[in-house]
Image (tube, rainbow, N blue to C red; front, side, top):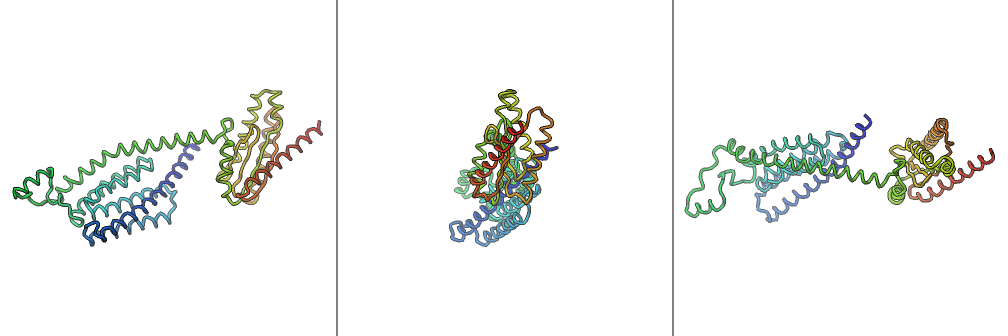
Length: 376
């Protein structure tokens, strides 16, 4: 159940990022159609201006509505991607109806966007809507869009064939008398079949992307994690100190240092010493949360960084640590002793906070050592 929940959370995070990217694509499409209209206005394109303006205006209205939708909804919701794909297909359909043969490639755009989600259901959903869109584009384009002479004459031969018969003053043939029958047979069905042939390729690309992301995530985890404890390692800690923590408003840095590790290694063996480190690492791992990261930065040194701690949150964490130490000491024959020191401050002062917490930890370590000697 826990693994399933983690996978769902990961999918939600991925969908959120893709939804944000899809909205960026809408902005690019908005810019693109605006440039098309401008080029036509300047007579660089030669499409009927009234026709172009009407189609572009509707497409722009759809894209703006999609962007507003993206601003007001929670992009983490699983159903949002289906609505965004529907907006994409709707805008593509309007452009296809308006510009007919100029917009042959727009039908593939929704499928390419759907590929990002690495989800078979969204791909099937997109294809089915694209089939409907293709029918609307062909039939709407014939009656309301830019004239596609091929739809009128149903040309089925190479250009040279028609050039030869035109030179002989022979008619090209009769006009398309049955568009509701001929156009689906000659245009809709072939285009949908060709689109379906792209689905295996798109699915393969989607699968390869997912596998690459998993491999990259695995490699990143290996490079960031301490092999013995599973906590973040020193390299990750230094990277966070340099790049991430200075941007956070307030931090609490907590240092942990295992006492008497050398004594355990010397008297009981390194295997017992390693077991002690693993045990402490596991205890510290239980302290982590969405705003708490734990690191092993040395042989017996650990750090927990709490981001923007609430009032009393660190006190609760330290009490939990004391309870863990007490329960663990009673269940093992190894004398568990860990020195703890912590400090607060603003993120931009991270280095000073680390230094202060480290000093307090060593002060605690000296006090514990002195107390232990006096008890002998």
